Amino acid sequence: MRVAILVVASVLSLCGSASAQGWEEYINKEDGFRVDFPSTPTITQTTFKSEYGADLPARVYTVTRGPERYSITVADYSQSPRLLDELVKKRCPEGFKDERACGFNNAGRGYWKEDIGGALLWATYAFVQRDAKVTHMAWAWQDLVEGHELQLTNNADQSRTFAFVTMHQNKLYIVEGTVPKAYPPPGLFQQSLGFVDQDGRGVRYQSVYSNMHAMYPNDFPGQPARTGQGGGRGGGAAPAPAQPQGAGR
Image 1 (cartoon, helix red, strand yellow):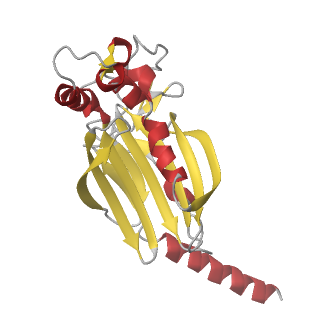
Image 2 (tube, rainbow, N blue to C red):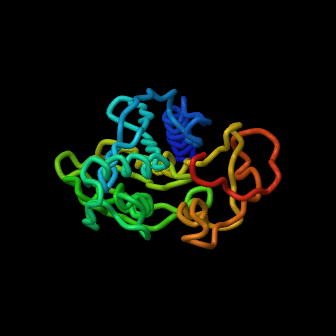
């Protein structure tokens, strides 16, 4: 009996190793993130429609492995003020004072402050609107950067999606892994997200980071300071502690 148990354990161990083969840390300095992918992702240039109508420049990093799909969408919200200002100029004649069309000082022209501040909810809302049952939704963080964690089960084929939506340095990150019914859930992919600086070194904060606090301290005080490299990932020596950079990085 013991021999049989050892054989079964060995087989399961080999299966687990085989399923993990090929997974490695992928670092992207341009978009400032790191994540574990099963292979090198395909990169697609696209646009992301913000809540207030800005067509933001975005990239989608995708790996498809059989019926499994893993992706990260990165949308550049630092362009929101400029793009929404351009929309205002098109839809508001000079001197036109309609508040909803043109925005106002506290919200920024075209409501760009609300556009950036609501980006997490906007991206999360898109998941909730799918033809799927939301089985888990919670506030969470990765690398001490706040975000929303979701799990969904597709109503048609019962496939499972694990997602994490977050924002760092005015960039929106949508991490999404989808696997067929009865497959191991893609939780490790969801939880492997981290952040890097322009040199590819890991970023870490002293407390939980909120994008609005760090990017707009005058309007949303209370941003945390960095402690240097975090998590032992990303390589390179730890930089000196520094405050996050402002908008327009």
